[in-house]
Amino acid sequence: MNNTSDKSERHRKAMAKQKAKVDQRIAEAATEQGVLLVLTGNGKGKSSSAFGMVVRSLGYGYKVGVVQFIKGKQLSGEELYVREKCPEVDFHQMGTGFTWNTQDREADTAAALATWEEAARMLRDESVHLVVLDELTYMLAYKYLDEELVLNALANRPPSQSVVVTGRGGGSALQELADTVTELKDVKHAFKSGIKARKGVDY
Image (cartoon, rainbow, N blue to C red):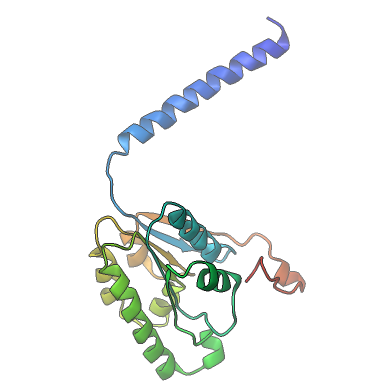
């Protein structure tokens, strides 16, 4: 057997072994239910990943709800697209902008509570396949929303409903409740080098 054939055979055996492991894990994952995903960390891409799942669900014809906390003053590409191209998406924003811009705790708390009512409604609706709660973690970190209230709503949502929560932090209780937690790490970011945020990439 020549060197090329030997490499090909070793590759085939390694891939066959890997496939067997993957097939076994798939067979063992027999539970059919919605999942709670938390996308956190200081890296870029948490909301982008969540909206990727929005598109994925829409592709299958599922009903989707999106609630954006904090955001709303500056238009984003995802907002423009969803509002214009996907009117079937139940889309709500707190609309106050970033908390460091408002600097008004009382008003921010009132806005958070009103916005949470929209989220709570979605979390009770078994017809909604996917709910995205974008930047919800900040509402918990700043104590604009009661943690127990939020966690109970997430825990008692319809069994088939999946939820994606994004934002830095959010507390250990949220991560403990979640089925999947992904922490995005900021290794390098253009903004720190003085490069402006770019339409279609950063917002």
